[in-house]
Image (cartoon, rainbow over all chains, first blue to last red; front, side, top):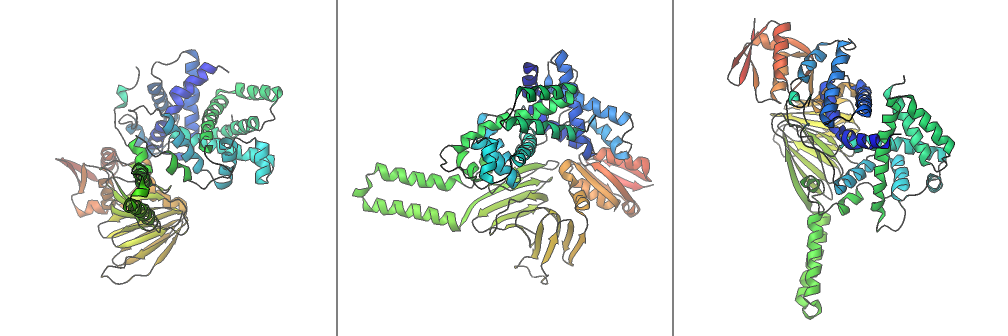
Length: 187
Length: 358
């Protein structure tokens, strides 16, 4: 793996996941497609950055998002009056584009512990023992009296949920700060 | 190619396997082969791995804790994030610090004054501690209020672990005590995600009615004298307030999927599916949705979110029925669609758009 590219991706792209998700939720009415859409955006940004890192990663990501949405609409996968109304809106406002949301160590810890608190009971117990108490999975299984396979499954589940909470920054208030998109793109 | 959810699931399985402790170079090679298949695999793994690696920092929470028991939710946050400079954090944990600070202050005073020489000082200090503890146990801990401007949404975290999303132009006052968590909805609408605390009910009051829950998700909205409650998870109890002069109405239990409208005339409950109930809460995602809704009602809905108001100029226009999903922030697009698809003519006068029947 190209570690410097991966680091760049975490540092410059994933930190904006919360803003990106709010943007997608606002513009894309088909909720069930958003996970897919996010993946496509990340893939396109990652592949472009492998060739040359964009100078303005955040704007680049949002521009990519917009292009992908327009592509999808044009390909005719979505034909509805709502979507057309929203395509129009894509050009109007992008919320949450403005302040950089880099977390201080303290905020990050707070966000992580909020994330862990939101896990379902058993999952939370597994993740707590594994990550906070730092016990190996084998011992977590012994202590909870469940199989190692189950612990592994709960770790997988926990990792996904924590990633969602952590990257999306659910704790951050979403105060809309409207800003024209055109000023942000093609820099 | 597999769907993105599927890919994320596989990536998580790899991560958990690697975390399990029995990880050979053969496993590593297989993981790398999987990552090489598609960029989508790689980014899914990087994304999960980044958060998981970060969660390593949680070890710090173990400090000062003897047994390796898993503590109940939310216990740490009150202790560890106290003196935060960030106002956001302060609102989240506002309830706890005031009292602890008083106790600490009292103890410091005792040490400095060589307390054994001053029985009065000692008694006073003990009294302060006792009163503080008593107050903490029985009284109201802290009142916090939140409000949003027209056209704004805000998600707020409450000190008990619950959270709320305030709709446009809304205001709540939160009072947390040991016996009850109380929210006064003074204006607008809010959606609540309630943390479970048996024996400490979560009560929202508005328009003389009380909506009680113990760990569930629901929204309450006020319209002049009416109240609307939408439940998407768990059960809530809707009861009339005890102080009002109107005819005593019975208490109603609302299961998930209920949409209850309470007015002076009584309470009407639609028991829909949760999915249908959620349609009433699309505002959280920036949408309003209508199904065979009279235009007058749809316009009133838009006006909850926008400074620029829409008015119905004649009754015939108000009676047209419309459907669809619209972004509430874009009332212009809404009006334009009306002009294109309905016998409606819009006229702009100052801050208001008047809709006439053509």
